[in-house]
View 1 (cartoon, rainbow, N blue to C red):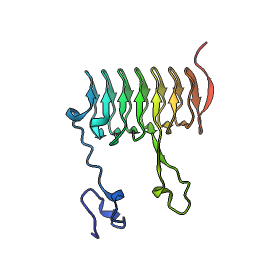
View 2 (cartoon, one colour):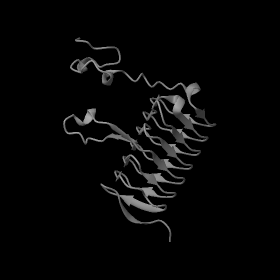
View 3 (cartoon, one colour):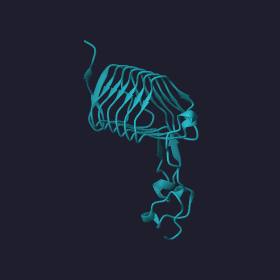
Amino acid sequence: MLGVRPGILEGSANLPDTDMAKSHGSGTPDTSKLARLGKDVVIEAGVLIFHPENIEIGDDVYIGHNTILKGYYKNKMVIGNGVWIGQQCFFHSAGGIKIGRNVGIGPAVKIITSHHDGEDTSKPILHTPIVFRAVVIEDDVDIGTSAVILPGVTVGRGAQVGAGAVVCEDVEPYAIVGGVPARVIRGRRT
């Protein structure tokens, strides 16, 4: 293998020898390193946790199989009490994530808190500055299977996000949104 370092897949030999190619570690959960671990938390098999020192998990939380909690060296991921996280979710908290209480998050949901600005066309987008923007999911929210929540979004209390929605703007409390990009379908209040 040509210059492949531990943590790099064999088929990745064409990667340049830069910081980009460094392994982020195995992500094997070590709950003793979490910033906070509440009572009665279930972390299923295959869950990966990176930068646990910046992740707080409340009481009565369920984290489904093969979910990735990708903490970051700065900012926090805070998961409130009574949260249910389905299988194969991916949360990247570079910009910070705050999930309120009693939130249901379906399988394969993605929460992303950073992006490359891409403004400088003399460089590949990958090498442009990273913009960090927090995501806030307020109490009592339901997020459907495979929805994507993009940087800077707040999903208001009691809102419902439809399956497969891509949420790139704030969602008002008790709104039901769906689609790509997500749009208001109706309100939950009668």
